[in-house]
Image (cartoon, rainbow, N blue to C red):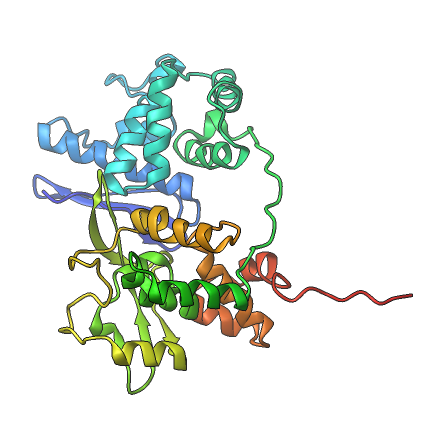
Length: 359
């Protein structure tokens, strides 16, 4: 028997499966409601497990009641105590991680285990969120991120809770002078010159670090001066030292034009086979973004007395300078893969400052 997947049926969510040569279906929730879709997905696993062990309820009462938060008693219904209506939060989160690995989910899982208290009521939920900031010392943004996950898992407990997060400042891009300093220094650095081309590409294309790490020669069309971006080399779930190839962050394919600086750099690099990585470590291994950030990048900025910003700020720098050069928000978004609202909010005006009139 195959795993049961949530399908779309108009605006509703649908499960469809077969058991002992009989076909079954279950419709529940709105397709555009992430919480309802996630709950039906979890129910699909319960159905699948029941079928495997021969405990499938052919009337579907058990599963309809479960979707409503009611535990089926087997004798026509009945409600058990509220805390028994749902699997424990830790169990639900472990299942969510197994289905779709996410570092924030893993962090929350460890935090829930450290809390060592059951969360059964709305009061318990509020106490846990308070504990995150008061005792655990989490920032408002991290707490809000965890809360969003918990609201998907148990909307009934966490939906009324809010966390206020102060607005982030605009991106702090590197100036052109700083970019030239960094690249000029790396070109002759006896320890880190190997990474000059990699960082030059980041500054001049705005690609995500994982996209640059996973860039293959087959993705580059030098005659047409284009880079095709549709996959990354991200960290493997459960083992961050291992990389796995997957789609881009927003799953969208885009084309990044190659300017003269990048064109000349790529022209000089030794060409590999289509499936070979364009950039590697000196020993030919996959680049580790954490290592390059903590060593090459951090040391270079310190040596040049340039205020430290993360390696990811190369992407912010590219987007900000594109807008400052006169490119439209839409043109910039098409190249970088950003959401237009994000560009408006965080990048517009981050490089070129308005000059106030003297009255």
